[in-house]
Length: 359
Ligand code: NAI
Image (cartoon, rainbow, N blue to C red; front, side, top):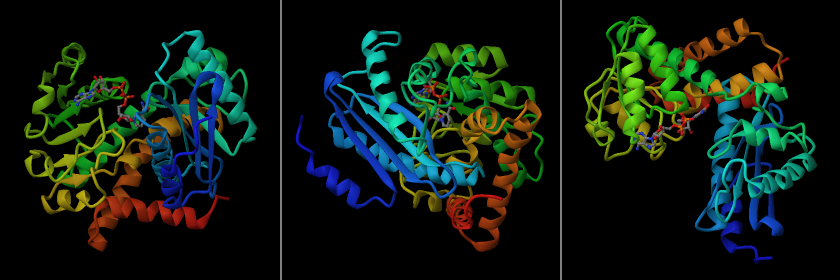
């Protein structure tokens, strides 16, 4: 077994979470990291990311950072869950359906089960419902299995609808009206979330622009919703009312913010800000920012609502619409207190954490 890299010690020393499980799984040569950042509101819940990292410390770094973000996301979404995240740092990511992939997932499922529900897993980067089905063979502490295996499937539909409500709330705050008729919305990334978001926006009468590094995807979505294509490298600077990042993190930085030509940033991508201080740059430019972990919580709301809390579709729609109401409150707090919307979101999450589980 490899010696424990000293970088692990440095990473853990700077982390304020509750528990980290580190396992090097010899037979699959996979580092398995589970981070339970907080159980103050319930079991730590968050996805399992499968990735080939340059060094195992990079995987641990992801788990620590992302599990903390999940604590804030779950709290802001008012769910009975805490923050958790897991990383499977494999030498390479085995193909979907392969026996090598199945082997990693089953061995990992045993690890999740041994935590007895402190951590509840779900899909994340490079994992999906078929992987959750395999994990579900060895543990019940998994959300997002296929519908025919008792799960609620891909939560991206919930994420997309939540982002749509968030965009409406942001536009109402910015313009005084939630009417999206002829409002120009640029969707960056026409994947699971962006593609569905484009449908909601078009239905509401918005003028949809679509950008994707995969030109075929952008074309397909744009054609379906009667929108136009923006080249992926021309997104920053493209004139629009609302910029909806739904592809990658780190899109809002001191380099890009001065060049944005929008009034609102509201999209699904995680970690949109290069640095938390970049929220102030957006505010100084008069661009309204919908904090990422608040607007993109529709996925965890979908998983918890359908699989744990027994909600029907009407309740789900009401709670996804609630993302808009939460954002409206955050925008109002930011205005009243003279703080950024990112700071206002953190305040809300911290207040809920301090108050403890509801009823
Ligand atoms: P996806 O992988 O299905 O789609 C991402 C799309 O972005 C792909 O079509 C890809 O070609 C495109 N893309 C990648 N780099 C790009 C670039 N530089 N410029 C333009 N397009 C680019 O991912 P998914 O599930 O739609 O998620 C999108 C974002 O939302 C990610 O940041 C994800 O972490 C976040 N998110 C997703 C949730 C979900 O329920 N799927 C929940 C919460 C956050």
